[in-house]
Image (cartoon, rainbow, N blue to C red; front, side, top):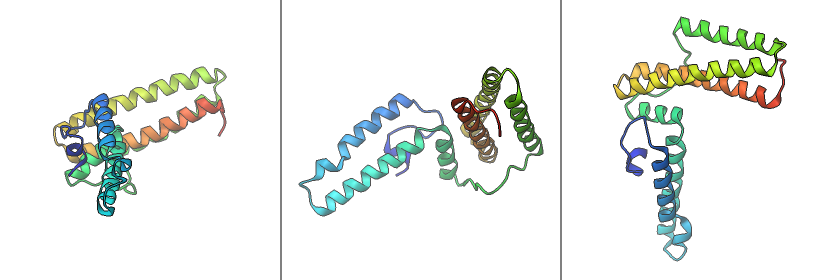
Length: 172
């Protein structure tokens, strides 16, 4: 049973997160190991395995990038993290983003400049996410896989900026 079927959800990228959470809580209650304390050893083990499967499925489906990766896997397209993005324009864009971050960190405006840069990167993330959603909906698996790799980079980069904002540190 795939994760979408487990939660009785349509097999698609866009999900209603409130519905997903609601179904997760319902399944958690139904298969919680404490409900099987008086059951046979085999039934307890089955309930534990089901509870673990429910937790794993929820963790995958609740986050857009892991959900996209799962959809790709379900359609025979595994993501190989070691394979680099082959798009030269995006590789140049990565370099430019790092250079721009370096400049922002040295900017006398400090945190304001960093927050503005963060908004720019967040906007790029959202645009790439919308593109990937369209590609997944259209079953353009190879394109979606390439978009997912780009999104993974942007998400990591965005997280790095968030850390700088939290730490209020502006040097490398």
